[in-house]
Amino acid sequence: MVDGVSGSSSTNNSALNGSRQTIAQNFDTFLSILTTQLKNQNPLDPLDTNQFTQQLVQFTGVEQQLKTNTFLESLLASTQTAGRMDAVGYIGKQVTISGKTTQLSGTNAMWGYNAEANVANANITIKNEKGDVVYTQNGSLNMGAGVFTWDGISTDGQPQPDGLYTMQIEGTNLSGKAVKVTTSSIGIVSAVDFSSGQPMVTVGAAKVPLSDVSEVRIPDAVTPPATPGKDDETKA
Image (tube, rainbow, N blue to C red):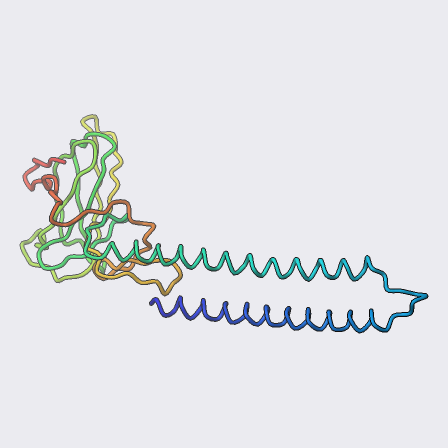
């Protein structure tokens, strides 16, 4: 995890340190040669001062660039450290992530949804990892955001095993026109992984980029809206 990032940074630092040593050695060699030339130059044909002055300026420019790179590296390292600390703060929090798949753990699986308009006829379908339909429900949805909670019991009354499940909602308004309903998964962050170069949060059995998280809550402070009812009394 973090070791992978640290290892990459160490490699880059080693390469940069090697560049600094090479530049320093070249600069020392250049000064030594220049000093020798000045001591042994022909008074009737002196060295071109403009030429070696330009070389001095070039070496100085490289040295300044190395110092700038060092400063940028330090700034980047500080930013990465702050980013990791922020990401670790997600552990134990309830997050909402774009997508249709969420984790069933015990008797609880949660999805968020958002209806662009009132839905008079909503069809909710839940599938397991194999793509088999395990649960369906009909009802209605109010326009806006809501939360759907599933207890893990299939339509025929059989408890389903823990795992990843996908939910899809299709609906129409009173005139029969389709209404777009987007879904998102809801779960608790159990870990954060930095090995891929960007923070990945672990929610259930899934790892997703931190950038996909659209909402963060403290679980105890969450009061989900009413879950759609099973007798066509669905409410957002």
